[in-house]
Image (tube, rainbow, N blue to C red; front, top):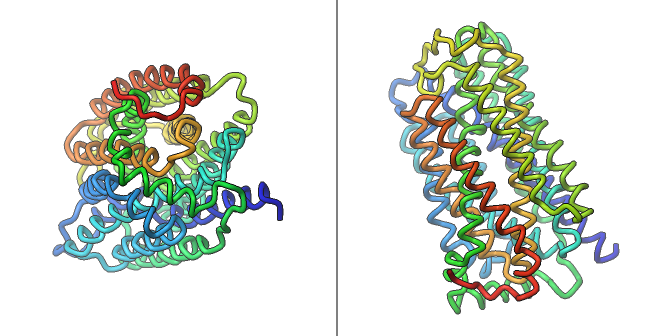
Length: 434
């Protein structure tokens, strides 16, 4: 196998491993709050929103140390151990207790920081400036296909049900735990590249950067500060499509007996949007004549359309509705078809932003990738934690408004960095502060 073929093989294995793991985790996040509100055990007092807030809060703090962990342990073993903690978190839902639920939330937050820093490192060392766009698209399409498989199972398993029984819950989460473990062990199939940028050399470079505090300096460079606004937006909308929107759909009583299975169908169409976007933009990135800005512009337009339609279709109190759901309506009788269309638009827009952020970070910081991806995940996760926290309290209209405002400024910030990206690389990544 040629060096280029081996690198492409590594990217595909990386994507498939994440596909299995996140078939479990993203499906878990999508249904967690609905499952919890249907628990018969009165001794359980957990909240899916609060769990996710803990996960992303710990995740954000742990990104400060994750480059060091990846430097010492290596990206492959880092991803494997992190995958085990993901599996433990999902297994907690088989027989949930409040203490184990929140304890696992803390540990998976730490594991997530290490996992995503190692993923960014692995993506970068298996790419160059000509393949980073393609490889980002391939990885993103494989990763987000996880939304399709897990939620397809939820759709058929819960079809026609208005209540999730203990047997239903256990069957689903045993299956999801197995999926997560399969993905975890697939990391051992990733091979070491033979060209100059080997894993050891990249790790050595990362380790040196940590010693001389360049990873801290990176937080305060002009490029990272501008991209942080864009990244903050991806954290807010990640919370919305992965945890809040499915809960909203499941709470609308006017959808009838299909309200619970529609959660799975919503996740499927989010996944379709992610897969189509990741695959298409990976191909588009082979030709860099137009840069990344048109894709990001498409993403924000698609999201603005989705936000307006959701505001028009879904009742305002849906995110915080009780076990009984809500009988209210918005500005029209709730439409299942429109709700699922918005799921697709949310996934498509998300793929626009994330593929281009992965691409530009790999392009700007190809020589020192781990700290750059750690910063990316730090900002994204802390904003996701904030969004999961306020999702316990804010009506739908205010959540949509917050995303619209941050999304607008995040798009402008991305444009600014993209316009200067080539000049930045030509000067060298000297971590210029402003």
